Amino acid sequence: GNSVTQMEGPVTLSEEAFLTINCTYTATGYPSLFWYVQYPGEGLQLLLKATKADDKGSNKGFEATYRKETTSFHLEKGSVQVSDSAVYFCALINTGTASKLTFGTGTRLQVTL
Amino acid sequence: SQTIHQWPATLVQPVGSPLSLECTVEGTSNPNLYWYRQAAGRGLQLLFYSVGIGQISSEVPQNLSASRPQDRQFILSSKKLLLSDSGFYLCAWKVQSNSPLHFGNGTRLTVT
Image 1 (tube, each protein chain N blue to C red):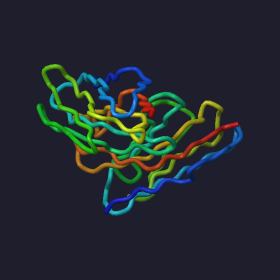
Image 2 (image 1 turned 90 degrees about the horizontal axis):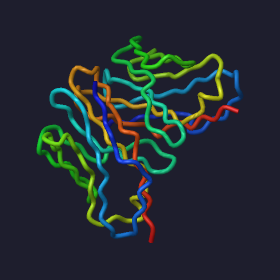
Image 3 (image 1 turned 90 degrees about the vertical axis):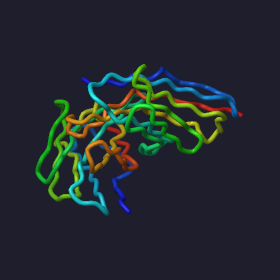
Image 4 (image 1 turned 30 degrees about the vertical axis):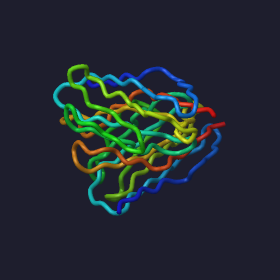
């Protein structure tokens, strides 16, 4: 079946530090991959997506590249801000799975001044 | 544009009481609809999904049920709440097969 593995959190960084949150997946075929962000007390918002190998999703300074050879979709940002503090979820969807997303367990990011 | 409404935002209920959480979607037709639960400090658990009116699929056995009385309305219910039902409940929708999910703002349920 499908699965998503994210690095354990929390991740604590100083403002302007470089961020990497690792995400690897297991799936048959050609899934689409997503990163969602959840700010405190809110629902999940789509941050970025990639639908095929070597695609790079980007939004708000965040980037992730769909690497089929390593089955990875690591999230990166060159310079984090305090406002980036949130929980980040990696997810995938595969055809033939009744349109169900498979989520990772989430990684909490705390950015301090 | 499409929007999703979920209410109430917060709810405190005693053990053994009934539950009804409602979710509606605007601006789209025949969406797939989903209920997720997020327990404190944990990931997302898919509870139910629906691909059409009256069609409900349950992902895990539990104390909850779901109904879809109208195309864009999805209701999560319980006849008798348990302490373990506490959590953050999220409704979501999507259309095309590999498109992303769009989430509501969630309902924080505390069972006391």
